[in-house]
Length: 271
Ligand code: NAI
Image (cartoon, rainbow, N blue to C red; front, side):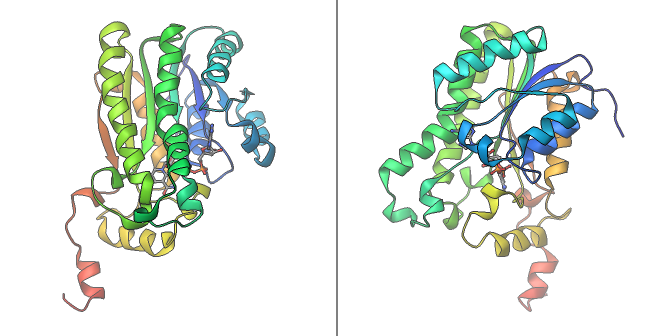
């Protein structure tokens, strides 16, 4: 059911790779809720991806941009305003990649070139997006920026290796930039800390399947799906949450505040 929550709003949605991507669901929901937006991804991802189908379905244009390049992000924000006919109201940062995770390198033995690449792609990209947008004055007052994160920023999950540190940085950038952009332009910046979700980035993590089931057994409501996450992002883009900024918002079915569940105790024979 649609509520027209984003009627008349213009957005930029990063990170839709395929139909499993969280960003893909956000695009579908934002379209249902009346938004117009530009889809963007790294040029290489778009050659492999199915983003054209999503663009057709949602009446969107695609503007490629590597989120590590200030130059390409500048083109993205400039062209998006031309295509959409005005300043931007919402931005989804849905970008994550760790070469150390891909290559299954343990945390205590990280490759530092890969580590820096991970920081650049997955955390600094948020800073760059915000800095470019601010310099161009491309986001409307009360506009909303949401970046996706994971709870390994607060608690240790050994398999998440360098991405744990990188997500902590991402969340910090959201707070720090949220202050400055809030004071100057009333732009809101939040991170959504999402349940494990079966996407290309998610399932690339060693032991993801077992961990997915574990989190599902702990969370009183079960794991939040990508579609649930999209609904939550839509509320954060809407005017109904206009005073929410600089927050890390857990969207995980109650996982983060549950110590242990009856289901898990039962499995251990301790119930
Ligand atoms: P995904 O693999 O579908 O999306 C990741 C996206 O990042 C891809 O579209 C990829 O092309 C893009 N990307 C990589 N390098 C880029 C670059 N240089 N420039 C622009 N885009 C680039 O996976 P998913 O799960 O939808 O990931 C989206 C976000 O959600 C990530 O930040 C991820 O860390 C976060 N997240 C995912 C969870 C999961 O379990 N899947 C849980 C919590 C957060």
